Image 1 (spheres, one colour):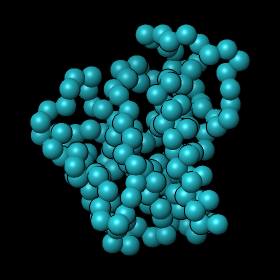
Image 2: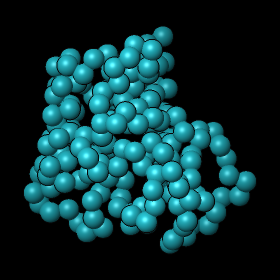
Image 3: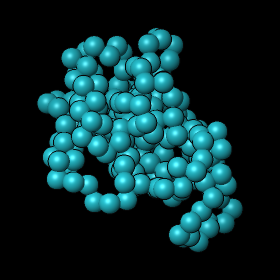
Amino acid sequence: MWCVAAHGGAGATTLAAQLAPVGDTGGVWPAHRDQSPYCVIVTRATVGGFKATNRLLRQYVCGLAGNVRVLAVVVIQASPKKPSKEIQRARALVEPIGNYAWEVIDIPFIDDYLNHTPDELALWTPGEEEEEKKKKQRHINLADRVPDRIESVGEQLMDLFTTDLSSKE
């Protein structure tokens, strides 16, 4: 499965660094036939981010993205504040189009990501169980532990992947 950044600074590299089954395409559609066709578009919750995502989704719907399957659009909040009305309206640009369906998954703003590079982050692997689920903490060290919300996104993506694969059998 691939993270496709809708724009620079979307968070695709960071998300892919924390989810073992996900790679980072560097902002382009995966082009090789021997690669997984499954994609997740990652965007920041900004007007520009939603417009860039809409351009990618239109490429996909029109068949211009190659042999790919968009499973989800992951929206990473750009700020801890409530999004403006303009951003809330622009969000409609990433909703499913016509007969094409994908999930829209939200990730809240996590300010500690500003203090880390992707190679410093802990990695989530499907099926990996923590020996002892840590108590909810207001602040975790991202180098030691993947935030619960990111683990949840990983689980959602794996469920979407599994469901899509089984529907083709």
